[in-house]
Length: 262
Ligand SMILES: CCCCCCCCC/C=C/C(=O)SCCNC(=O)CCNC(=O)[C@H](O)C(C)(C)COP(=O)(O)OP(=O)(O)OC[C@H]1O[C@@H](n2cnc3c(N)ncnc32)[C@H](O)[C@@H]1OP(=O)(O)O
Ligand SMILES: NC(=O)C1=CN([C@@H]2O[C@H](COP(=O)(O)OP(=O)(O)OC[C@H]3O[C@@H](n4cnc5c(N)ncnc54)[C@H](OP(=O)(O)O)[C@@H]3O)[C@@H](O)[C@H]2O)C=CC1
Image (cartoon, rainbow, N blue to C red; front, side, top):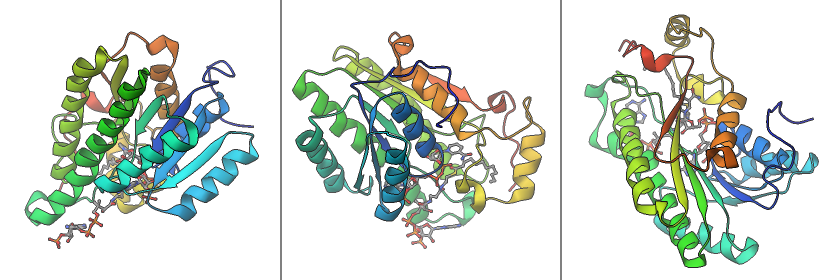
């Protein structure tokens, strides 16, 4: 079965990809697509049961899939992920920093700790994964690619100041690391999805979601598979000369400016 794709079967044969948040939503669609194109996929997130179920389903489609439970906010756990990847599978080629999230709240209702939690997950967590991955690649003299999944930042995100600030940090980190690590053969790019139909959206007000979708140039939600195709493009040979960019997969949301009401 598998996802519909424009890419050739076995495009990623011999490659290993580590996908954070790979057991659900967008991360699972990326795991599925890279796996069906021949990559060995390693799923990382906090909940072992979710990962185990996803890996069982992927394996039933003859995809080579494994998982490592870890919290990307914890530096020690991140280090251990890459120790395991090196010991068990001799390293990996691709890192997809997809794990992330936030809660919606007016800025004045967000405590210092609430702000910190979201920055810790989306910015610090992405940094910890990226830096451990790059050190592993450079030690082994191996090239690689990083994709950071961020948010459509538009001109501001009322109701999500913590996430907007953290993801803007990741967008600039993407550019800076593209400079620093280009000479090591590491391409670093980001994808900014708009509103994508996953269970992650359940926490948002459905009326607000509907209003923002209706105003889009392409007035529907995106599908996780549409984000996965973009990731496959950036990881493929077609993406070999692309680094430091952020690709918007958002139905045109980035054209619109801030429209959320809080
Ligand atoms: C706008 C419409 C768009 C409408 C348009 C929407 C477009 C959607 C686009 C994006 C979609 C997605 O990203 S979908 C992604 C989906 N998945 C997620 O977002 C889930 C991820 N969320 C999380 O994991 C967590 O919520 C996370 C943010 C990291 C916090 O984790 P922690 O376990 O550390 O958090 P806690 O210990 O519970 O809380 C830490 C502090 O945060 C505070 N806190 C927690 N929830 C709070 C809340 N709702 N309001 C205020 N404050 C809150 C707590 O009070 C604590 O502060 P103190 O009391 O001071 O200690
Ligand atoms: N859906 C949408 O409209 C959009 C989503 N995004 C972003 O895309 C990414 C995927 O979102 P989506 O698939 O929709 O939602 P999900 O809630 O399904 O995905 C979030 C994933 O992150 C993992 N995760 C959360 N915290 C941690 C942590 N501390 N350590 C390791 N893993 C963690 C979760 O797994 P576990 O709980 O097992 O740890 C889960 O698999 C997120 O970064 C999200 O913010 C961006 C724009 C729009």
